[in-house]
Image (cartoon, rainbow, N blue to C red; front, side, top):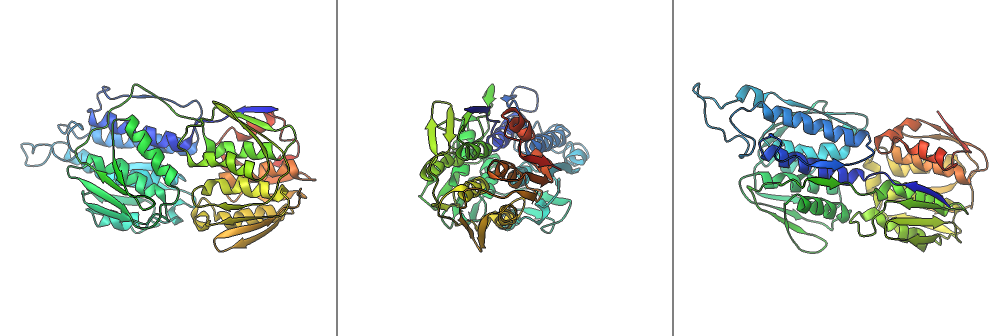
Length: 437
């Protein structure tokens, strides 16, 4: 069986880096709150968050007298009647967030809670991706922002505590951003989720990482939770934080295992992880793949694959990999509750359909889902990566069940989350039917 060590979780890394930076900021940027984060592989998205956090710390370090351990903006007036560091503090921090939706959506409220003026510089399709209703909630609580879609996207003013209401079916990233930011404010706040929360596991991950950095959040309710956030809180850094293995990107290796007789074993996956994407192992098993789990690994090899119905709501990032496996399964697979895939790096319902159909699959695109009628194998051919890392990885693994080579245009998009993806494919001898352009 082929083996691969999974890369660190991008989702876990974003949250840990932000919490560690806030602990350092609240300690006064003097090194007392430093945390060493162990993350042996990074990606463009992780690097974007790291660079943005450095820009925020640089902006705050110019606010002489504020100390950064106090509530932002509460320094005493200087002899000229202004606040110490006013010139530096009001100079916008330039936040190069690349194409990382997590970086933008997490740091918008954090930047405003710190009282820093921010010029966010999104790239690619990110400016087109929605910010509502986070946008409206922030403007209702003391912030001024550029029109949505602007580059740079400017944020001014200081976030105010209070009651925030968000639907649960747009983006859990909005909730995460507010959860990270609101404890920094002087007053208490509450976040009410007005519809059933999809991708709830991502919010659970946020709460888990915040607890690791000394920040507990009150939670009540079931599928429409309410979060009670005490103000005036301080993050406390753990000396070392090790980022856990990434179930999201491991899904493509597990899919490769489900499509091959030899199979693939992924090392470095925690069975007790709160990552919602760990459900991929159970879904592949439900589709008929042979799945073995251990303390820190999951191994998958091909079985008698058959179609099932997959609810994309809790696991939207798994749909490209699962759609590919469905192409090799007997019968019909239905992907339901998948409307949010249209606002990812690409319109993923459209791009999955385009790529798989182009390779010979039988896929019908619906308004909020897909119907895939498995054929056992694919023909092969050309695949447009749609500037979407998960679409590129799906197309690459599709070469394993294609009679002819698969040629991927735009393969470099994997750098967003998994720069070494094709290196790992070569190491496992899985790239024999693959051409990259």
